[in-house]
View 1 (tube, rainbow, N blue to C red):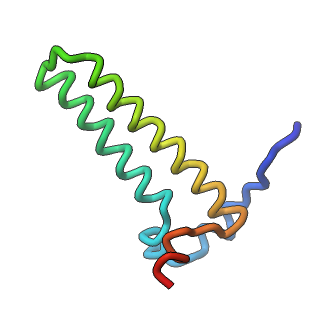
View 2 (cartoon, rainbow, N blue to C red):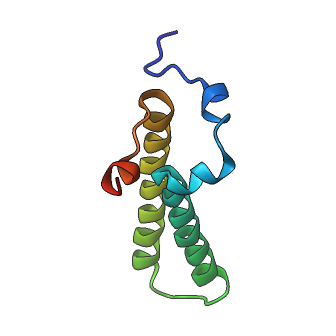
Length: 88
């Protein structure tokens, strides 16, 4: 089986637990979680009639989540952290 990435979580998880606050994948997952939670709130509790906008916001949350998963893979394999390079 051919894989593009060699995932080694052992080295990634040995860092300090506060290092996660400087990772863009963490913020991407938190943002997408809030967006999807908002969509669930609007659909079930607020009973919105405008489904087109709700579907577009839900797809935005999913796309942010997928983008942040790619950031996580780049952080693990290449030590890529654009937040650290901006604030150096």
